[in-house]
Length: 414
Length: 186
Image 1 (spheres, rainbow over the protein chains, first blue to last red):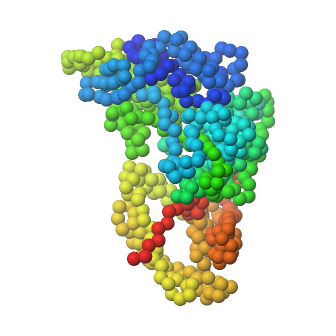
Image 2: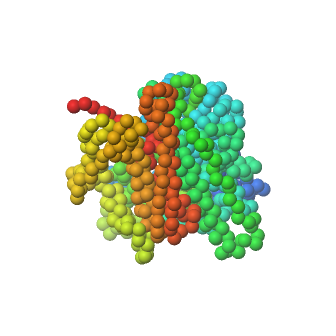
Image 3: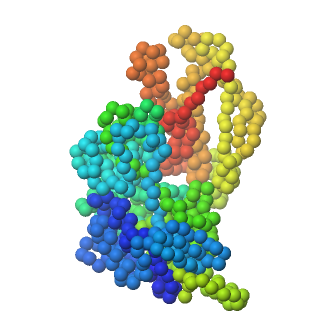
């Protein structure tokens, strides 16, 4: 967005609570690699130029990538500045920070969709003998006590964390709710390559049947594995991880209750994967890829044991740690604008917030299926900066007509 | 998808359901329902239950008629077999909920159903309910539902109907997840 605003000569500042790529520096586990290949992180005027386009960035490489981009585009970033409130006083936005105040006519909310790890309320009923950690503050298996580990959540984070903890010699039980299985490689190419060329990632928010639903589906169960192998539930059970259903609750006497829906969760996921691959196959046929690509293939169905356990007594000491990989929600505690729906999410239409002059970036399926990927930021920023520029121009012509002076210094007005 | 003019008719008014979903999204308080039944003991293990009113859309709702159910146990339990056993009512509830869901999802996905038949079986070790072995639970060890579906669709699409129906089924959720139950004496 900063780059797009600069291109339009719109004066602006980027407020960052830490250093550039703060979340990547502070809220990621050690072994994590980006789940999209190097070539796919394309930002306006910036892309991958190294010799491993199909590799997956490590966290230090991601941090370098963003730091380098900020420098290349001379982004006016004010680091170590935490925004404490954003409000509108009738004339413009007033931004309070721990390093002074800003006034501006437009504001872009780019604080991310994953600020607070979601943990169910019944966590309070767990015995004290069990340590709790979230995917946000998990770093490596060395942090955990010896003994069994329950990983709750089987999307990209949960499966990767389950894998490395099981490999560390601790028995992992993985609690599986809704998830979407995906092969890392398909027909000789990265799955992301197919989704990119077939236009799946470019599908727009106004082209889908039910955008609310599209925004709430879990992300693909993908991992940036150096050997480009698929990390699905079958790969995990093959190394000894045990699967149980969604963690539905904890009784007052400390027993975990798992849902009996594991089989359907896996069936839904296998079917969804099948539909995605069918779509890719059809696209490949229609676009002449059948001669060059490896023939279609399908992974075997997800294996689920006959009667997965429905309960587990947490007081018996079998489980020492629970890792919550149960998703995130945004933190808008500083946003003092009347823009929230009843679920506490910002009301917006493709990133144009339901409040004149406010914009949202980086949310799932904001404008396109890829909006939450690094690769999705460029197109969204181009669209939204265009809207923002027009809104500023409108406001300016209106002011000229009114011959009124709004006075205060603006942070985002030429 | 509901705007597509199609000849598919499974007898489900999907447009009305979608309109209701839209309306209830805007007025979530109207989505608060209370389902009710009344049960009266007759004799032995025989009881008689009635279902008539429920609360929903912000007010009390009446049925066109009162539905009645006799529940009892079979003669091998030294009962008079005047109705299905309560656990069979649970099976009926699950199968009919999933089947209704299949019809609704099929209509929404433009799939014409010709026949949908389910058999449902719950395994139970009655040493639990008889108090013979406290390690054996009272309820089902597991439930197996088998569908035979004839429809204008590929096998994967039919499997997807059945999977989606489980995902959206109230009874499936009730059976597969714990529910707080409060039983009081007036």
